[in-house]
Length: 268
Image (cartoon, rainbow, N blue to C red; front, side, top):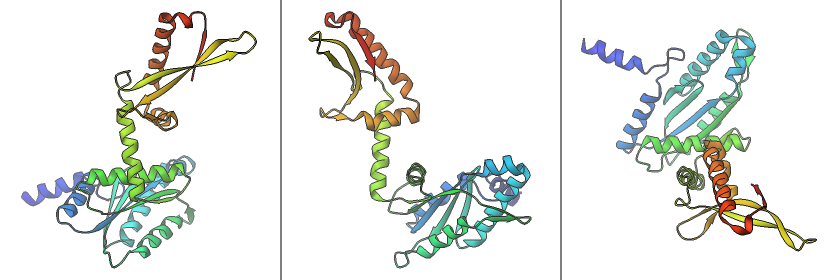
């Protein structure tokens, strides 16, 4: 009974389509290696066009292609562990040695990803994004996975297929997370300010309108560029509360400032 229950518990985390362990097993494996101080590296693989294959050839063929991809991946790297986190997202955990940079493994994986999956004589080319991480002493699996996801996002935005988790890339990730945390609270107390830039009419020798500009102030008095935090606000959905904040602040200023009476304000 004990063996049976243990087996059932193990099967709960197994993807029924690819027969690979899922996210729970992946995070457990990483945390175990960290605890044992065993050097390792992780690949995050995201297949991009599986939904298109299913649309063009049917769900059955799409499922078979995904199964073959997982089967060959596990077979090719039998000295490591392959996981199917969800959908068409996979991870590969391999041992790592400082004496062997294992660049050959990276080349083998890239070569495998570039090779079409042959299903019933029909070659299926899978578009992918691959990110690589080598353990550098992080204390938990969540941080490692966040680095892999960030590298994957950078690769996608740069139109690349591969990205490696570097110290500079991790600094950019931490900066991004800091900015996301900052813009989650949209208020004057949180550092958001509205600056009014007058548009001067040289014929009338006065300003006839103005433009409202949003700024985000740091505690040390410096300012974060809108070019840095506005794109993040758009990606995370925070652009909506930010927009309402700007509108409300502009309306408040127009109703309370005599110099702004009868003036037009454009909101940027």
